[in-house]
Length: 148
Image (cartoon, rainbow, N blue to C red; front, side, top):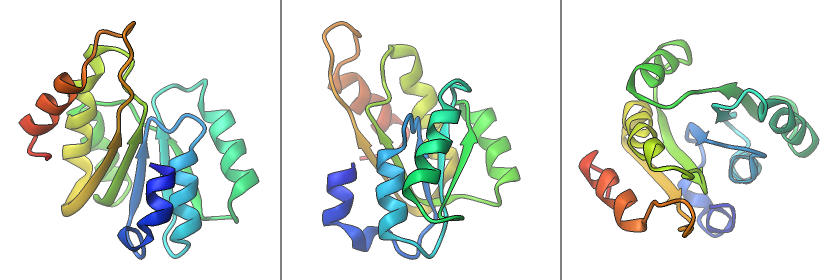
């Protein structure tokens, strides 16, 4: 999503942006660089990933441009996150976040729960033979949640 965002910057300002499964946060950092008005929220469910994410955000963004949070995927966790973070998001980013089939459903439940009604999800999927998740699996789950 980072190269896509640089070509489609009009998708961002002044919208609320969330990155799911941020890892090191490249798409979220790109979004924050393109839309400095609103802080981008970068999330990862892995507490071990958060220190590196926070360091990367601190190193690459001005203070306040990005916020790092833990977010586990699934409808209930997303609803709690929604309540504590003040509502939904206009753009949700997720890049290369599916490594096992079991996370596909919770990923799209999370996006569905946190996306504003007229929002957009930008999802990049990299198929891997060793994972057992196909693009068709991901598309089927996304379409089942109303995404296209």
